[in-house]
Amino acid sequence: MKAKRLLRKLYLALMIAAVSNLPLLVYGLFTGRLMEGTIPAQPAAAVVGAILLSICWLYFNIRPYHDKNHAKLRLVIMRGGRTLGFAAIYGILAQCLIAFVLYPRLLSGSAETAEWPVGVLIGNMVFAAAALLVLLWNGILRMYLTSARLRVRMRVLMLLAMWIPIVNLAVLLHAMRLVRAEYDFACYKESVRSTRVESNLCRTKYPLIMVHGVGFRDLRYFNYWGRIPRELTRLGATVYYGNQEALGTITYNAEDIRKKILEVVKETGCEKVNIIAHSKGGLDARYAISKLGMAPYTASLTTVSTPHHGCRFVDYAVRLPEGLYRLVAKCFDRTFSRFGDKNPDFYTATHQFSTESSRAFNESVPDASGVFYQSYASKMRDCFSDPLLWIPYCLIKPLEGDNDGLVSTESARWGEFRTVFASSGHRGISHGDMIDLKREDYKGFDVVECYVQIVSELVKKGF
Image (cartoon, rainbow, N blue to C red; front, side, top):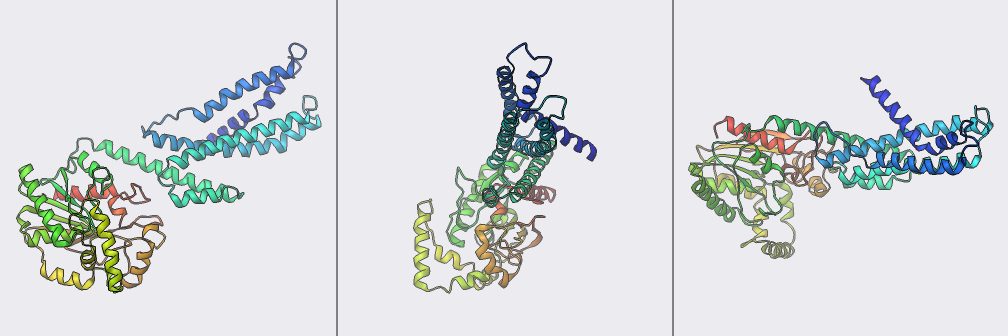
């Protein structure tokens, strides 16, 4: 297998080198002894060379890349960029070999042909360099514009390293590895999806209500849960949303959830619902179940990254000067009222995350009998895992240990605690990653597949 791959790379290098040296080859052909005296040699060489170069370069730079895995067009273009990048690198290496081995022989006249004009060799070298750079930049731009794993940090690094020899090559090769991993992962997901066609893997007995966290709403054109609901629906699930407010208090949002549960029960004719809640949504749902009489209508509650035991970070945040805190709260309330909140209350909602408030909440809102409670958490590797949450991560880490940038793994434990999600790469999984906030896939972690497994386990439990 390795020998076959090596031969393929050698063939690609020779092919690219041959195309980039077409001016040299055409000139040699038309000034050879067989053609000598029959036609004007150099003008004919220029015309034929231009035609051949146009055809070959259009083929290498624009041709479609057929994909046996039936990947999406974005992935095919991205993979083609990686192929072009490697082709250019191999071509550059072959061109260096030609320049150091063949050119001296042509200049010295030691080859079978007569001594070659220096201008022809220089012109050929200039063309070869330009052609290979066009090929290389074509590949780089394809990857740069289509890859999801080349995040902002990697794209900035590619721009900064562009003019630094050796470093730019190392950065480019790393980018190509990320692209290859992204392509392989996407093809694997597609193969898994194809085996699940009409499998009804996520067809639960009771419909799902997905409840969002603080600071967001269930907007029509921007789904809080990213790609997750679409995949669950494709696999047979019936999905609804909590539609509670972004900055409402627990008691206020719980009333919205109560109305939604009754609405879904009436609409579907089912007896109960399954609730999957993220962050503060888990607290809202718990209150609706235990305090607003929704236990008879709820089969299960799955909480993801919910601060059941509060956040010690909030304990320090609420000690800010009262006047300043209320001023900030007023600004948030005014902003979110424009997004549809009827009763935003940033001041009270954030204070409810303190450890003291959480302790009082847990004592007054016990779990309801007959409802299955389970919980999940995630954790970041370090402060560099997610640029959006590096400040709260650094503040929470010394106080509470492992966390996702907002909620510690210990605080997220409630009911039957299942697992702590983490990726096999450096990044880790943040609070926002658990709802597919950035619509990205990470090494060793597929958030969509996580929810598919969560819901499929509810199916196995009879929910």
